[in-house]
Image 1 (cartoon, one colour):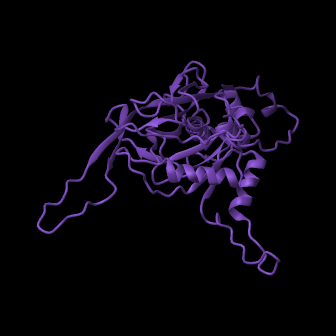
Image 2 (cartoon, rainbow, N blue to C red; image 1 turned 90 degrees about the vertical axis):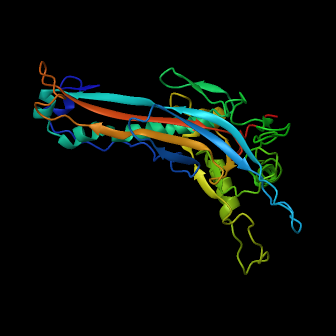
Length: 337
């Protein structure tokens, strides 16, 4: 994009123009949800990182007098490899625009590319959930993004028969019949936690699921608020009734999980919701190059010697991977079996 006096004539016209501030994008809800574990990657250490699971048995064994203690059992789970990639944008501004415009604060607003890097990271993270019913999706740049969880499973994140690394046991993390969020549906999710959460030795795990996530759909958001925050008047006829969900979950609204790859609202994903464990999560974001803007200065290599244009460069480099689906339970909310 080039800022010049032809395409942006209002900046330099003689008549005064009254400007109002344009809208900024929403905060980075997915990155800050508690579901994503962020890892800083040092320079000169390669462009990939492998993330692998390791489990041990849950319980000690009985030891009789004088006998040797039993050996603990270790089982490696699945491994996924994260590969880094860069995102970038250049914004050019002509000499005439820099020296003749009357509204420097508006130019500063247009050059506020610093938000775009975090926004891109957040939508890429969100698509890992929003497209979690498939094994891949095509992103806004036309790249094919694999969503397979566990290098040996060839399965999408949300499924009904995830295999463990050992034995014949499988588990599901997609709620049967995919109901919309309600008290009964949440109890169904909690049954998945109680009955379908295993380590790779096939042992049932007891772990806290502390996050309730939804899209920004008002009905779904309000249903979550009613479930988590409703309370009764102690002087009312139903006094003494306690809300069992009070304090059980942190409700996080993830607007971008219901977007298309291009960043447009997808109504088919309107009612997506689920619960997740911040403790068990293996959803990783690796930061090779934190989002930043490189601003030019006069007579620097950011100034074109032929045109006197300045180039503002916005850059970021990162990778994303999800190893398996034990840590998250999901419903598409569309009633599909």
